[in-house]
Length: 279
Length: 198
Image (cartoon, rainbow over the protein chains, first blue to last red):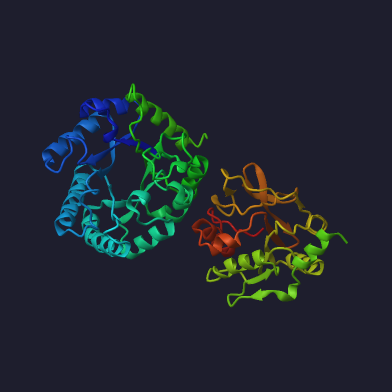
C-alpha cells in the first residue's frame, strides 16, 4: 500500500510548494488533488498550469494518488436543475483530463444527493444514467471513476449490497467505489464494505468515526485515525483478504488548534501502523 | 446418558440422509438449522468441478455413519468435514480419526478472519464459535489467530479435511474468498499446482 493525503489539509495560508515539501518531510508517497478547493486547482486552471503542478509534485518526489473534487455538493449529476447537472458533467470530465495530465488513473466523485425534494428513486436512476454516459470518457482516458460512499451526507447507497447493485446497474469496469472507511458511521461496518466490494475499490479514504455522535448534533463525527470507533485490525485484515494493495488516502478534518502541520505528521505515523498491520 | 449427549444424538445425521448432487458431490448435513444452512451453501457452489469420491459433511454424524465415513477414506475417498461447534464429538473424533477437538472459542470482534495456508493462502470470515483442532499425524491448514482450526490428514488411501470454522454459511453469503477456497479444494489443485488430496 502507498499513503497519500489531500492538498485540502494544507494549513491555511500555506503555498502549494510549501505544502508539497511538508508532505515529503512527513513521508507521504503521494498527494490527492482536490479540484475546486484550493486556489491552485480550479476549473479555470489551464492545462499548462496543471503540467507545472505535476512537475512540482514529481520534483518533490511525490506521485498523484487521485484527483477528487469539492464541487459535487453544489453541482451534482443527480440534480434536477439541468444547468447544475451539465456543470457536474463538465467538472467530472475536467477531473478525467487532469488525471491524464497528472499521469494518474483514478478520480473521486460524489454521485447522488437525496433530499426532501429529490427523492431516492429519482436520484438513483439519474446517477446510473449519468455514470453510463461518463463511463466511455473514463474508458478512453483509462481513468477509473471512484464513486465515494458519503452515505450519511448523501442519504444515498447506504449499504454495501446496495452499492454493489448500483455498480452492477452502471455496468462498467471503469466505474467503481472510492471507499471511505470513516463514512459508514453507525449504519454498518467498514470491513464488510471492503469484503463485499473488494475488486471494485479504486482508492481508499482513511479516517476514523465517532459513531455515538450520529449526525444530528453540531459536533463532527469524524476524528483522527485510532481515536474513533473503526475496527482497524478488521479493516486491515479485510484489505489483505480482498487483495487491495493500492493507495490509501487520509481525509482528515483539520482538528489541531495549534501546530496544524503536526496533524499531517501524526496522520502519517498512524497510516504506517495501519499499513504494516502493527495494531 | 447426559443431557448434552442426548442433544448431540438429536443433532447427528445418519448416512442415509445424505444428499447427492447431479455433479456427483455428496453432502451429508445434520438436521439442525445451521448444518442445513451450511449444506445449502455447499449446494450453491455445486457447479464447481468436483471429484466423485468427495463427501462433504456438515455437522455431527452418528457413530455408525462415522465408521462408514472412515471406511470411505480408507478405501481412497475424500471427505471435507465441517465440525459442528454446537455438537462437538471429541471422543468419536479422537478414537476414530486421531483428531483432538478442543473447547469451541468465541470469535473476537477485532479478529474476524480465518487464515488458510492451504490449498492457497487466503482469509475467510470466521464462523463463531470456532473449534480448535489438533492432530499430530495431520497437517494444519488454517489458523484463527495462533490457534489451529483446520487440519488435513491421510487415512488409508484417502484423506479427510476437518474444518473448525464453518465454511458453508460463507458460501451461501457469496463470500468471494470462501468460494475460491471451495473451488480449489473441490478441483483438487493448489496455487502451486499440486494436488489437494489430504
